[in-house]
Length: 480
Image 1 (cartoon, rainbow, N blue to C red):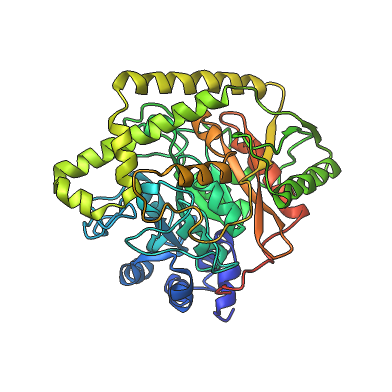
Image 2: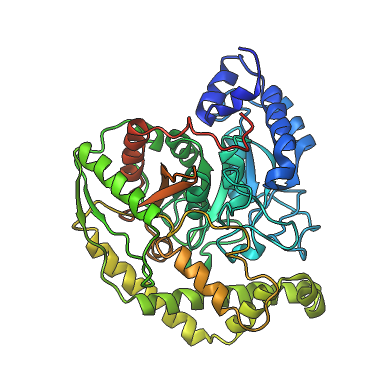
């Protein structure tokens, strides 16, 4: 097979198979991805920290028996460490501080044969649903360069959508994998709480809201990567129930006739845009044609209490993060390096007491039990992923703010009302690219399953991918 950029239109499972058959060499594959990144780098600004020479050295030493041998990927530049490479958290404060060790999930990526080409752009400390950090500049959506790719895993989603790599690491504390998956037209799974490790730095991060996984071009890549990374690490405070067989074996297995609840009303009282309602209606018709039972229903819980508790946990964790940086760098350095909204939210977090934090955790745990009872009636819950197609750059970014960030906060809340609940309950949820607008902008649909229910999500996702394939759609900014 002659190597060309069209190779990059393959998914990761297919690429690894080509390497094992010796039809491709890992170094050839890595060089093809590097060339793709360089060709669209100025347009997308998806990769903020290239690791090209390190990747080439790893490709030359690749082991042929790994499941993803020679496959290039990208690592989100938030929290996760790669030895010798800075983890900036999207902030100028940390952009020149190399990590001293690998995070556990990076160790598992390496064991799986994946080769990291660099770090992807993310908003400062992952705080918003767009990727426009002051330190690195905005990442642009490959479907429309004037629009956001979503956030906080926006660089990862843009890179995968543009076929720079077949998969890219992401993290999700309120929708940060699924939101950019919707905006960029790729697959984004938030696994069950505790499915993937957060060590060695963290055991429970933000009260269990945050999980790690990836953005992928195919469902089978999503499943195969989960097989490579899932499972407890030493010292984990808890972990997800193990599957009975590899997740990849579930892809193509019949999901059965599922009971699926559907709703489109945003959980802050605002209605979804017509395009997002249409995406859900179209998905509903497809599901019914495949033999699933779909009915309008949604969990009944105290939305106002949820929002207060969720915000308290986010702000107090940000305050703790900034306090640690003040110890390391000093107050003046933190104040001058960090963005205004980060500092404002950090101050608000400092005023949340320990008792209030514990109360917020308790509220979310009670809501999780309420939602779990809803899933005794239904196998899945279908909603839009976000409330509008990807908005213009700047709309979800606070900009040069003073003490009033309420308009910005309201815009983010109204744009992404559907995704945070699964972070609070720990349930797995996935965004699938099943719909495009008349302007050729992707609109994802969002499925939530029971705690530990990735099998149901992956079986259904594979069935939908077969019924309505999306990989043939390529954005205007595309390497393949």
